[in-house]
Image 1 (cartoon, rainbow, N blue to C red):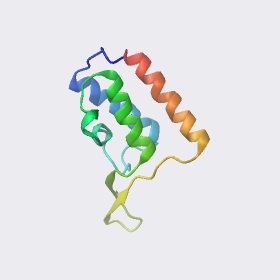
Image 2 (tube, one colour):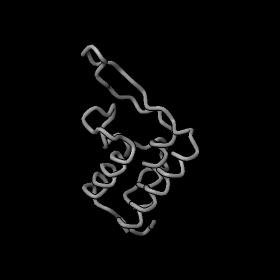
Image 3 (tube, helix red, strand yellow):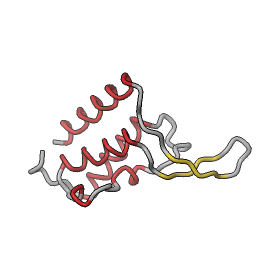
Image 4 (spheres, one colour):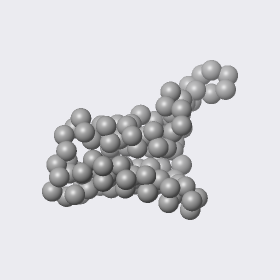
Length: 105
């Protein structure tokens, strides 16, 4: 998968599908799909499928992405995504991300 280069549009599609895995309601999600593609380290820069998978997986599992959500009474408030700590959710998300990666290959 390291030799499979993907276009920026394909990276965005990958991030959009991964975003749908995490957030049930896309409209009220605190982050945008393109935020899942933000690299945390210099070595994570790359357009291959393996690097894209690892970057998206790390951003989902570790959390810490800044976003905004609408409060119960209407105004926007700043939020930070939480890491995935539940073992069953961790396994489920990793399996779904791996399936998505295999299909992109």
